Image 1 (cartoon, rainbow, N blue to C red):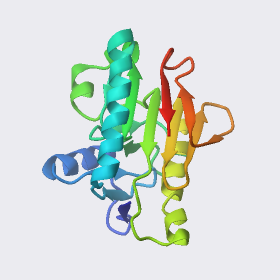
Image 2 (cartoon, helix red, strand yellow; image 1 turned 30 degrees about the vertical axis):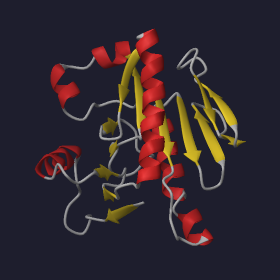
Image 3 (tube, rainbow, N blue to C red; image 1 turned 180 degrees about the vertical axis):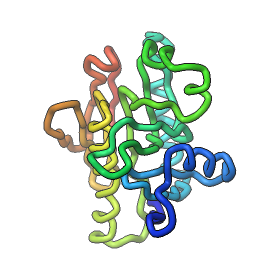
Image 4 (cartoon, one colour; image 1 turned 45 degrees about the vertical axis):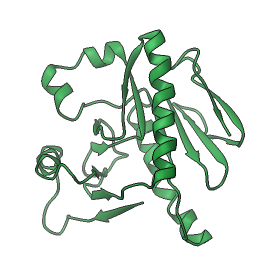
Length: 203
């Protein structure tokens, strides 16, 4: 869940302006859409927090064994290079879990690493948080921004992404230049050639 602010009547928010805004308001989780909209993220509840932490720990465990890349938490903002043809070409997004291949990460300068990294992760997980007492129609409507966000990652070069949807007991798998695949729970997800040897049981 998030609050979207359209700032276009007064300003076209650039990436640098967005970065400075985040630095001045460090306690507020924000993203920036391809259209330059400011997205204020709602804090998640305990159950979703447990699920997110579990997902991160499993990716971290695999990565510590393989040492193939770098794992990032949901607090990390990435400056994505694509934006679906909108007036603002890039956007600023925070996946719940993100992984970047080591050579791509090491190709960035120290300044680029310390600010919002200017690349799209190779792999992401987005976890749909619980919607509490929202009705069915309202709940379905709140899934659309996450699906659009996953497409945005693909347009920016994402190789593999999972949208985990506990409400509907489904997982959507996003792959570069391939149709979206939907699997029902329980499902065993493979890291394929992006995260070789990584498997995750969703139940």
